[in-house]
Amino acid sequence: MRSLFDKHNFAFKWTFAEFEGAEALYGWCIERVIAAYKDIADTFHKTGLVVEAAHEQAVLRSVTVTQGNGADLKHLSDASIAHVCMDPPYYDNVMYAELADFFYVWEKRTLGHLLPEYFTGEVTDKENEAVANPARFAAFGRKKKELADADYEAKMTAIFAECHRVLRDDGVLTVMFTHKRAEAWDTLGTALLEAGFTIETSWPVNTESEHSLHQARLNSAASTIMLVCRKRMTKPVEQIFFEDIESDVRQASREALVRFERSGLSGVDLLLSTYGPAMSVISGHWPVYSSRASEDGTMQLLRPEEALDAARSEVARLQLNRIVGHSAQFEPFTDFTLLAWHTFKAAEFGFDDARRLALNTGGLDVDDLVRAKIVEKKAGTVRLREPQERVVRGSSASMAGVNPVAEHFDHPIDAVHTVCYIADMDGLTSAKAFLDRTSLTKDRGFRDCLQGLINAVPRVKAQGEWVVPLAGILDRLVTAYLPDVVLPAVAAEPKTYVQGVLSEAG
Ligand SMILES: C[S@@+](CC[C@H](N)C(=O)[O-])C[C@H]1O[C@@H](n2cnc3c(N)ncnc32)[C@H](O)[C@@H]1O
Image (cartoon, rainbow, N blue to C red; front, side):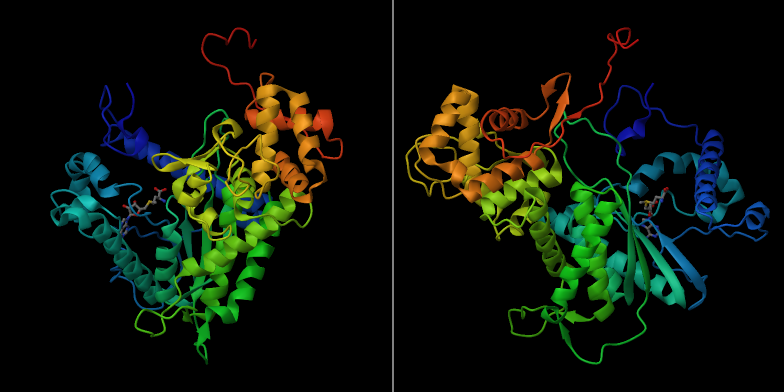
């Protein structure tokens, strides 16, 4: 028997079973809450933030649990709350109310006898639920998704505004932020700013479980970010435009990158960790106006996306220098390939992540990358092509791709991929002949790109085989002919055991 909600939806299963919701569920929930509370208390204890005496003493205080719409906290008076902590829904990620009906009908007939005020509806309240649920707008046909998104934004804005009302002037609002859809930063960010909050600090919390590099990972972020917000108390004396604070946004992103990398974040999570500090700069100056006027020529409020674009391009510039080992300049196709390997650590990643990375590498869009045979578009994802999938016919250097008969290359990544292609197809001696003929080893762009690619493509072996074949080709080429290029250590992927080989594992 398998539980129905493994995937947070009603996907068909062979069996439909869940917790017995009348009694067993509560024991389990309470157990989980106590375990989490204990972990939190232990963490404080270990960090020395809680002194022994306080830790031992029971705090006797009454707790009131209420249930209802976060946009309507009428039982709380203005400026009365010290801390609001929120883990909001993210667009259409989970349809909580629909799923909760599964239990609601049973709980109504059990818990409902004790707490009838929780069970006034026939089923759960879907009207006030802050999720982007296109099913609720089915009557509007093709517009249903757009309307569902707008409904979600409006509800989240109302909820943040209500939090602002009940929060004390010196109070704190903590919002958990995850990143399934990048627009969340724009929407929830705007809602927070418009409700009158500044973002003081952001804490990325790594929740990643170990993935196997064998599986192409759809690299949505694994970390959650806690945004620590306060009421904005000052009004700017003059109108602020984005260009007035852009350099501060870039500096905050650079500093965040260095800080969070030191704490062990990498890839998309590292990139995301720079968004909070970037948002923090604009929130401190809000309202900030966009550098671009609207169509009718009037000033328009900045969308956080514009600031995050600046943060991303700053991070891209810094990361490219890191990948190569010194300050390096390429062109957008090479930049994209190096940054994509470095950021996603896999050939396949989400379309939206690709679109944003492309935008921040010379304003490319994904179709430019498809035309240059850098990536292949798939449903909802893109995949970096292998050198042998990038071969072009003809000898025009301006045509992007792998070209064994070319005399020279406009894009360093094409030159490196061409050498790799020849080495793989015809052997290392042919690759050497090609390098000699084209004098590529004397070309700075080629050497930097080669070093960058070696550093960016995961050098991981599993059971003696390179997980990413390109890493193996680069390794052989460099070992044979390019002694000046630095080869980083090879990591071994932990062996995974499947049923049937368990006995071999001892
Ligand atoms: C990301 S979940 C929070 C999960 C929670 N942190 C936990 O560990 O169980 C978001 C929650 O917001 C609730 N929610 C949705 N719309 C709401 C609204 N208008 N007011 C209050 N809560 C709402 C959903 O029912 C869901 O339980």
